[in-house]
Image (cartoon, rainbow, N blue to C red; front, side, top):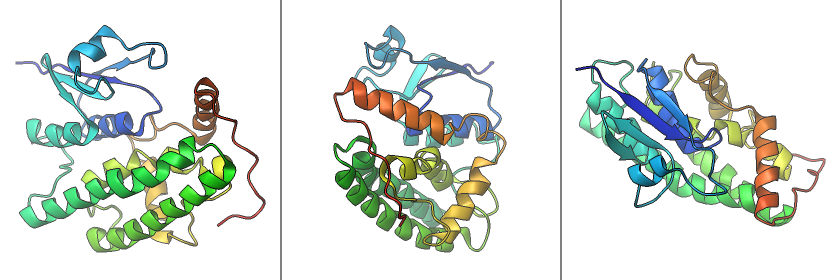
Length: 239
C-alpha cells in the first residue's frame, strides 16, 4: 500500500518546522498544504483534521490525522521504523531522557520566549530574553550530557531534541533585532551556538528554515494586526 502523507502548516511556525524537519530528514515524501488564513479564519481542512485545538501542524497519514508537533515527530519514528535517522533512542532510559528535554523546550523555553515575541515594551521583551537565556544555559548543559561529545543531542545523528529545539533556531536568531539581546551567543552557550549552525546547515533543514529578516518582518506585521506597538530599536549593548 502506497503511503500518503500530507502536512498542514504555516511557514513561520516553529512547531510546523519540527514536522517538516522530521519528514525531510527521514526522506519521506509528503504534500505540504500552507494554511493561509490564520488571521482571517482557518481552512476547512485544518478544522476537520484538528477540531479540538484548531491549530497547525497536522499530519494526515492515509486519511488519518495526527495533531501536535511532538506527537507527529514521534509518530513518524514509529510508523516508519525503516526510515533513518531514528529520532528516538532504542534504549528506554535514553528515550525517556530525550522526551524529558523535548518537554523542557516546550515548557521552560517556550514560556520564556513568548513575551520576547509578543511583549508590549522593550523592557518586557529584554527581561523575557534573560529568562530564555537561562533556559538555554540549562540546555547547554543538557547538550553536553546527551551528545556524549558528538555533534547533536542524538549523538552522531539528529534526534528528537534536535528537531524539537531546532524549530526555534530561526526565531532565536531574531532576538537581537526584537529586543537587543543575542540569545544564541557563542560566548554564553558555545555548544548550542555551534550546534545551531550545524543543524541549520543540514539537508532537509536548510531548505525550509526561515531566515531571520523574514521572521522579523512577519513579527512586525503580526504585532500590528494585534494592536501591539512595533519593536523599538535594540540597545547598543548585547548580553
